[in-house]
Image (cartoon, rainbow, N blue to C red; front, side):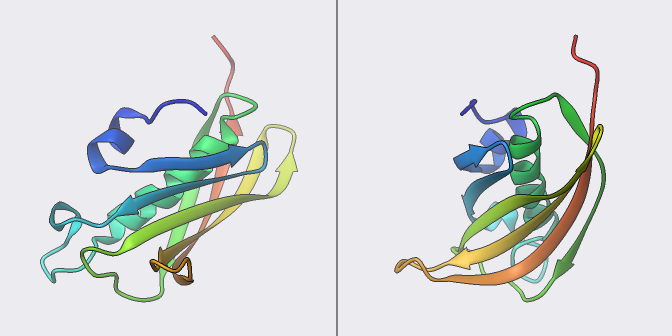
Length: 127
């Protein structure tokens, strides 16, 4: 597993695992991740899902995201532990489609899904 990207390190995103077809990252929501309503900013959840997708996608080839969208299902409080797990859904030549679930994980390991993400990556030429 490669080290965290600069933005992952800045936000406190921790790589948990990754394979050729999936990856998991986690983050504890702190006050700097909150919006004006005092809950986790949606951009943080999006970035967490994107980080999981990026780790999985780049495990076998250099790639960049070409599209992504997210549905937020519920608010996430400061202090919550978030986990994003990305899974490969389709692969066609240089294009891959990924699904990621963002969940709040409790101390006993229970996961409650709080957002659903779908993204596309495209292979780029290696340098």
